[in-house]
Image (tube, rainbow, N blue to C red; front, side, top):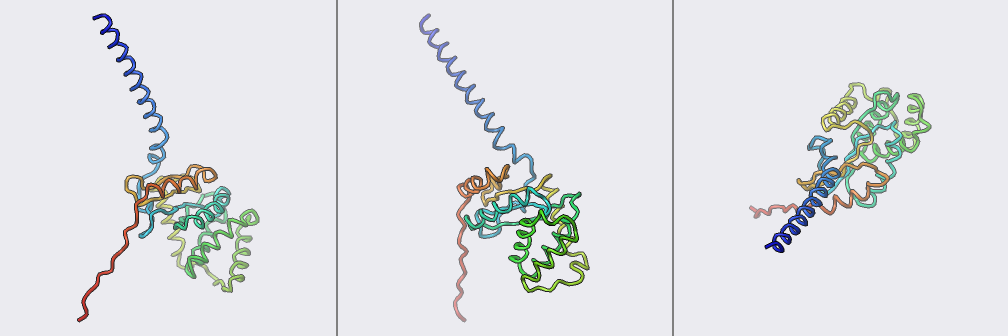
Length: 229
């Protein structure tokens, strides 16, 4: 009886250690995985466009140095993975020319989205030399001339482009964004709708790989065939 009791106590202690270890592991995983999701409100904007498994959603400010640093990485990721890149304005209040730059980018969007994104990329690439509104105007005029486009006297006379920028800002606030760039890798998997990129230098490509691994195959749309009448 004594040997049996000792054996049971030993097995019980081992089981307690085992479950304690599992509990600590679970706490460790919880501290790392779900924490980022709790920082943000789920939103339809954090979804890939129809027909895409994965996309990049970015909130940025054209005068933000960190955004300028991340931009070449995002360009490289889009070229490598061939995934959509959805860009939103999230203006920093004390920046003195980013609002005007965002309005001009959206004006170029009206010509073509490719042209608008090219303007944004060029602004980021030349950000250090654009130190006030006058320099931005000069840069924009040169960009337009290089593309054979005549700029109007008033870029946004009715304020429609500015309203879209404000809508982006409101969207970012609703999601819970507080800094730029805020980069999400969004998926079509409802269980893991997005991954927030903590450090673009270290995490961007790894997070895209993770998103692709958990995303769902895109169902081909079938065109209904109707008999001729």
